[in-house]
Image 1 (cartoon, rainbow, N blue to C red):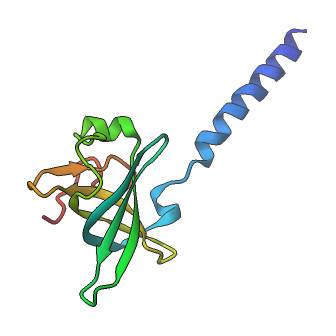
Image 2 (image 1 turned 180 degrees about the vertical axis):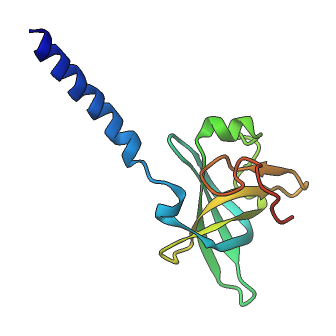
Image 3 (image 1 turned 120 degrees about the vertical axis):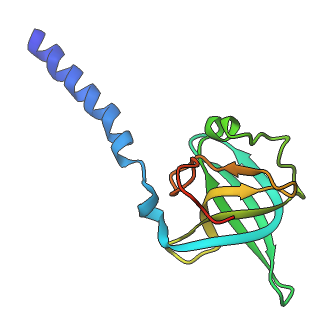
Length: 138
């Protein structure tokens, strides 16, 4: 009976560990050799677990608009860095430094964003510099 309990307990621990191991890392989706700096207008903010997303419309010099999706860390991480639902309303003009998706789509992971008043908010995700640990461009 004790052996059966030990086997069941070991199996349960294995099931719990697999999702943590399967969670993607920065390098799985984003390219450290493709840094991006984009400026645009916030169209939507999703502060949901396990990752947050900021959607930005970026206008190019020819007038076309690209719709960007920027991934950030967990909401709690963003809250600790100063980003809340009220601090980044739809229509806000922001500048984001991060890294583009490996697929080349208009998706990226943010390291930090700068608000119109010049405040820098670290995105708290898996991107290099997202937690304020690197000396990043201004």
